[in-house]
Image (cartoon, rainbow, N blue to C red; front, top):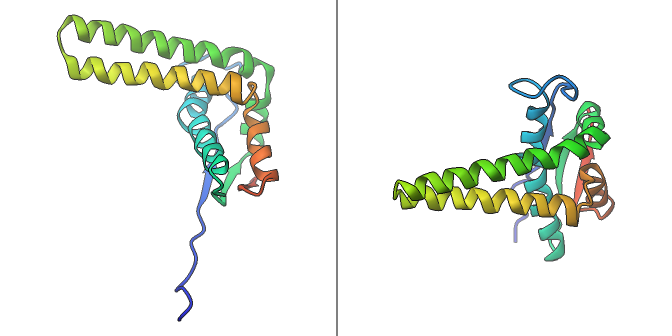
Length: 150
């Protein structure tokens, strides 16, 4: 048997400017909330599920000090759930509007977004105890991921 032709190294890199306390939209804290909701939490949820199933993802993720500082900030931990609640309310309103217009496909799609944001809220509060940075640290300590900073 011959050896495999090579190896793959997957490195995910994240960076955002410092946005906490700089208003919300379009270039303020909402950028951080969106990154947490659409990148960090889904990644953590997937990595944790893989570890639970006995699979180590062995992915390198770059977290800059500015991102880590903001995710660990008490203001983020206080305000991020409000962002998720707002996303849930918006998706529920969309679902109602689409149902009223009898657009069943879009109503179904909006319902999926309601579920998505509710699940993120549950993961954030119940599984991660509002500690995204700690969840990444735990995965590194388990050998599931490698954290690098720049």
